[in-house]
Length: 401
View (cartoon, rainbow, N blue to C red):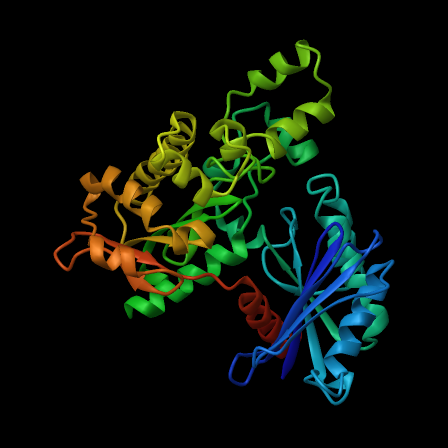
């Protein structure tokens, strides 16, 4: 079965086509600047042959049409006919409490996605436009929604509720939902396989560290806590997001004359490594380089980033009652031996004994980075959200629901 995976953003559309018999990526790419000036198609075939070109794309339907034509292209395409695409999996950021697993998209599911527009205003609306564009361009083909929030819906009430008046939860759905669920699910399952142990028997702390960062505590195959909250703003220090702060800071900023939009922009787009680092960059590589060159502000940002990870690692270790492994993934988690060393040095008291050579050599590949004598194991596990969406889509379509 060939499955097309779609991730529709606010002005972009990413796609990956898989042949699921061998889980082989056939082609991938993205359409950027949809509805804006100078839209661009970036396309890469499985053998490395690629194309980048300006395209005329004013809508998501145009974007899907452009992608379809490239997949059929006689020179660089991988399909003879669009009918070879037997299912389409969509990344949908927010599914609220109703969506606890991937589902075939129907009228009811669309209604739930729309109901969550207010919870994920930057993501769910374009996700929906991607779905509707695929329905138009691929009539009769099953579209499956795979929700970022779904994997975290196993959390108990003591983890997902905030200590606010209970009616704010019952009336308005104010609670912790968690995000990056597809990534946490993929790396947790992959880690279990890598360690040769049943996923249903493992206790894991998974850390997705990139421009967006989140952590999850996973016990016996289900999430018991996660760092992101009602929105992706809560939790770890991120590239441009602040993570955990005193809620009264928002009130203080408002009283100082900032508008709600200005506060939102400050917390989501001007904070984190960018806001603290003082070098006008949210890239961890730039932060590390500046700190090594003696920039104290960049060093402060780096230490804050690590300190927050350590804080969550310690609390999750206690919540889980010990762990089988801590798992690093995402751009920083997979490639920054520097950050991993800082974290593991700080939590060595929990039984993590870093193997410096293994850590330095493990970049973008699965590997154990602790010593053989280490009481607990630290693992680097590359994530692959697109493949996880394809797998989930295949499972849903095969079961017919």
